[in-house]
Amino acid sequence: MKRGSRVSYLEELKKILSPERVSTNEVILDQHSKDESYHRPSLPDAVVFPVSAEEVSKVMNIAEKFKIPIVPFGLGTSLEGHVIPYNGGITVDFSLMDTIIEVFPTDFLVKVQPGVTRSKLNQELKKHGLFFSVDPGADATLGGMAATNASGTTSVRYGIMRDQVRDMEVVLADGTIMHTGNLAAKSSSGYNLNGLFVGSEGTLGCFTELTLRVYGIPELIVAGMASFETVGQAVDAVVSILSAGIQVARIELVDQQSIAQVNIYSGTDYLEVPTLFLEFHGNEAGLMQDMEFAKEILADNKCSEFKFEKDAQSRNQLWEARHNLAYAVMRAHPGKKMMVTDVCLPISELANGIESAKEAMARYELPGGIVGHVGDGNYHALLMLDVNDEEEMKRAENFNSHIVEFALSKGGTCTGEHGVGIGKMKYQSLEHGNSLHIMKALKKTLDPHNILNPGKIFNMD
View 1: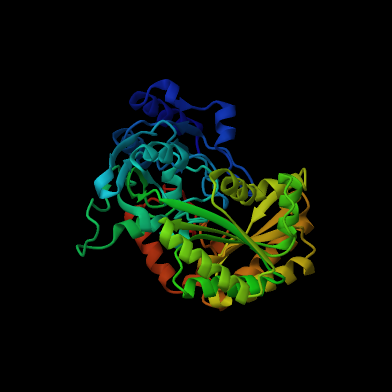
View 2: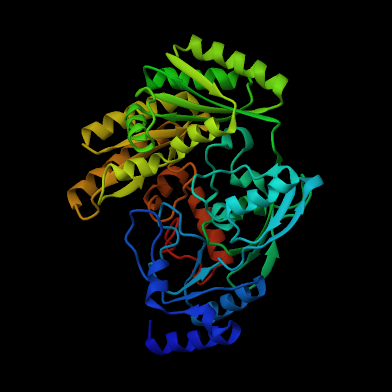
């Protein structure tokens, strides 16, 4: 990019935004050069901080005029390099657009700006006896969660991010401001644009407002954990619980290596064997019946030990141990960077997939553990790597390719919730075949100059 053109578009940006909301400060640029992944950082040319859809539209007009890349940015908690601006350009930071616009308690909806975080939203919703269900672990922004179609521990009961989006305000590459839906619970009118834009990772437009589905806080929540001798027994128990129609809200698998790290980090003394972390939501009468039924099912599937926690403190301690797992693994490997894989399989193939992954981890001599949202077939391998060791990184990439190819061969996907970014681009043709051409045609129609987060999901060459 020529220096003169950079000066020109920076001056135009400062005319539509106050100068303090257009930054070329080295510290700010560095903060927006990376996410939480192991992928190589790259600096943007400038970072802007809009406060409205109209400002985003004007920024987009300038970007289109100068053919400058635009990269949306929430909190940078993504795990596949989604927000890394490898082509330079303008990073649009949505941190100032963090207003909870309106809560619709009787419609079980809320309207928010994209910079609102999950924890901030739930703090406000609690006043209305409501909560937002998607829990990806990180306190991500809702705009970022929609961009990657995030899910997490509660998706087995409440669904993924795409299931919660009723409407979005989107700014397109030419500056057009549009809406993708409405407030109605269902519609048979037109194409499903919510489904198109959720998971588009900033390649089709910038989200400036979201209308999301929320839920009533359950009368009673009970958490529990169940220990097994093998991963296969644990997954069989999951299938049995789901088949029985028990309203389980979370059901997570943690392998024995990961449980060992949890014990070291959290000071717990859990059995170091494959373990299910469970949570049940409902009213007291129904939940007691579900729990008794679940105990019978766990016992039938050779569960060696199980316990349930009703009080909030014990429940929170149990889930805190699960959520802190990544930090536990990182502490055990100082100086290394975490690589988190993210495949999803049909539940019938999940046990085989995890066993195949464990064998491959041993074969490639990679340190780490395996956890999974086993209720919907999604599992992660947590690998700790020296990013400066080319040979180790190559082994990690070979491992990732192994588990992805296994998942695809069984009708699964290369990413269950983290998204494609740059890390999963090489698998898109294998997974999608000829439908990838349709995706590229849609991208070209909505973004003819390829300025929206270029080089993510797939290349346009």
